[in-house]
Amino acid sequence: MSTFGHRIAHNGGLLGAIALFVVMFTIYTSNHPVGLTAAVAATAANKAVLLALVAMAQTLPVLTRGLDLSVGMVFILANCLASAIVVGTIGEGFLGIVAVLGVGALAGLLNGAIVVWGRLQPIITTLATGAIYYGTALFIRPGPGGDVQSDIADFATGQLFGVFPTSLAILLAVVVFVWLPYRNSVLGRAAYAVGSNEQAAYMSGVPVQRAKLLAYTLAGLLAALGGLMLTFNTYSGEASSPIAGNYTLNSIAAVVIGGTSLFGGWGSAIGSIFGAFVLRTIEDLLFVFNLDPLWQPLFQGIVLLAAVSLGAVRILRIRNRLELFA
Image (tube, rainbow, N blue to C red; front, side, top):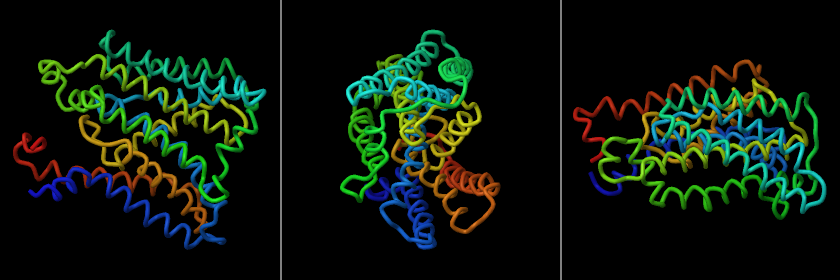
């Protein structure tokens, strides 16, 4: 196989997610009553970025062959905490933002520490810690309410130069300054090695424990950033278990649609971003075609099933599993 063909095959999931999103978003904007305006783009971006950040968070543990069921709870915890401390002056608001992101990273570090040193399964670990994070969120915000620093919130959910959604710029900054350095770092490459074969990675001298700890810590940080953006959108916080569960499940779906293998060692956070965009665009399509929102899970399931099936085709065509790493 040529180098170009290998790249296409390697990034097939990402390219498929991008193509699907482009088609769906084109249909959405062409059928929207006012077309693609700056306001329409900003509204769509503000909703999509929330799931995109949580999907990025989910991607990192998945690469190490783990699954983080607490990302939705960290998302909600950050939302409730931000509604309580990201207030006051702009300076106080920024200090609150740092505190919220720090709490998210600490939650992720706790997940990683239990998985690494407690040697518990990631699903069981994050299911338990997620309940703790939800309880903390409920303690902070027993009922919906709170506030947020309006100048920061208006900027984060507005438009740069009156055209480009700021939330997309923030997402792009996360990709450039968090994902790409991580992907090309020693521990980032180690995460892929751990997901492919943890025993072989360990025997080869790969820092398995540090790779897992960093993956879960960054997952907590990104989930908290998503919760922070939710607060900027709603100007309030709510300890909602259904919302947390919905974001957790959709983050896993976005990861699969974006071409990341749930068996670890394969995929990209960028693919997960476009997988999240696809899921969010389904909701927008139902709106413009005036369809019942109850149809949304059906269409999401169809898209997810198609993505899983396409990913399975590659495995079914392989006679020798060593060909996966050729």
